[in-house]
Image (cartoon, rainbow, N blue to C red):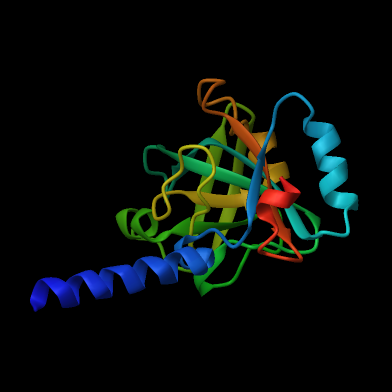
Length: 190
């Protein structure tokens, strides 16, 4: 009986996750990879009536330093809204509203003993920037990021700090996160 009940609970949980992608940090319907034809895809996505929202997201790494500590290299996602709004899933606090604000994954914030309102230093090959932690979030899965161990910043800050330069070019990834007006039309839209 325990095995049957366990299987039913597992199946119900899996169905819930598949029906609610925001529960695992993916509040969009489709990721469009950069590559040949990317600019054409970007135009079709942002101009199309079938698209409710679109966000450009870049994946890489940046260095974090807290109170003068040695830098800790972490997964970083830079985001920029193209149409409508697709924000990361925020568990505490709020989404970044400015270029000097950062969201952190739970494991990262716990490891660095950071809380909402704390200040940290982000750095990369392009320089350094002081940021304020404005929220704890499920970090979007873009590139090789982990949902609880990374950061989300504005795409301009990510690029100016050199977030794509700290990883091998094969690991630096840019995608368009796309939310459709009809969530059941993913295959047709693709």
